[in-house]
Length: 400
Image 1: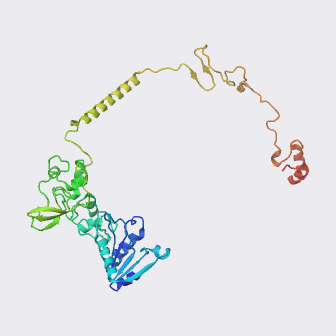
Image 2 (image 1 turned 90 degrees about the vertical axis):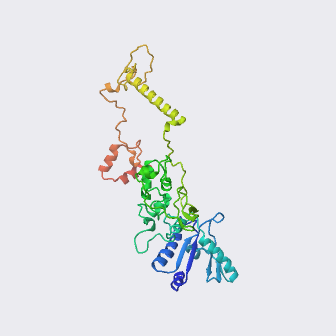
Image 3 (image 1 turned 120 degrees about the vertical axis):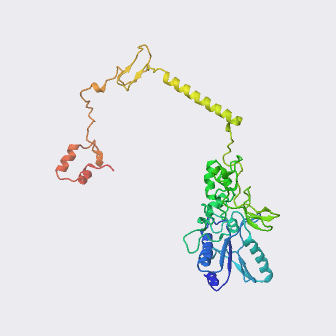
């Protein structure tokens, strides 16, 4: 609230946040959205927040401080997050000194203006570097006043939105990045037709390296955009044939590349290396021969399998309903109790069950009675006489 009140009074606020944890800490993205989209874009306040870009010797932003009016510096242990104020013990010192403030200001400007090829402040999947290079908004992905996002726009009307231009290494402001007369929106289809990476087709006039310009293979003769005249000292977005330049300057009637590529160019060979005649490689011929031999072996094996006559078994075992012995002299084990055991009685031939005095006998110990001291008839007689089960248990001494 204090920062918002200050911005409402006309104070300019610039905030740098540590981007190392931006993927896991929602407060970082929320703060950037609050400063850039809400306060700046919607309310018109002079507030800007961005993630600090890294360098070879700087990976994280660990400086906790504030510079006020170029004359005072607040330094301490406080992080610019809710946990610092709500859960941590923090200390801070406000220093009023021009020399200390100047040192902090120099460091702040270095961190503020540094740009790398990975940091993405607004979370739109396009790096701050590329958005700066092509004049896009690195601080907010939203198009204020609309429901559109910046990455979904197509300013050059080539059929490819800004995000896909970035992912494929194209120029979002030039409809035909590599000048091969194929619109950037069609480069992906062309790349698939020649089995090459879309990133290479986007930046190369001969993606499949067959000596035939991509435009001729695609079916066009003239470029859609005329070549820009070269005036000494003039600059323009990169359109070099090698496809690795994003900004050029005219020197002595020739365009010279001055800016590195946004997206690293893939291997020149593409993702599939296909020659005009694949069988010209010795390894390919050997592999083809092995495949042919495998097919022939499979065919021969199948032929023998179908031609082999069916064979019958010498012995048939079907449960215990009877074994068939083709050879009476063949020694085989006869399990005791089966129908082949002559000494055992076949229970299926019996017509009367065996009464051993136990089967079907009433079990009286369900209530804990001692079967040697009572019987079912006695229990039933006692119940018929009006005794309850509890009284019977007391008389007969229920087992515990």
